[in-house]
Length: 138
Image (cartoon, rainbow, N blue to C red; front, top):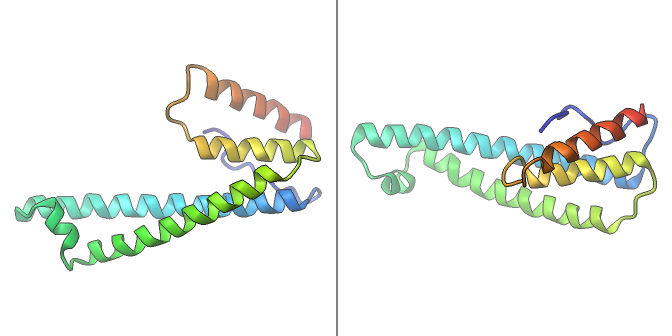
């Protein structure tokens, strides 16, 4: 997704909705980082299991440090998923009062959808429209 540095909350323009969206983005980014860490550990654990001739399933149940960290990360990822789901429902329930809030809601939707499984051109069209909206905001 383009424009990942865009901040939903501008210093000169703040609202409760923008605050909630900024919190959602922060929690979402934390969740994504934990998922990437989990995947890195999974690769490491799989490599070690293969080199040792151990079944992959057994390596997950082992007392290896990677497996323990992955289990802890699973819980954190699930907790963050619940928090972001709750905030997304709150964001949806709040009315839009400005173009900045509209752009921020679209930003959340794009992050929720991700870059996979879009119909041809749909993602690019939404991103292009959002870029134009952001430019009009200054």
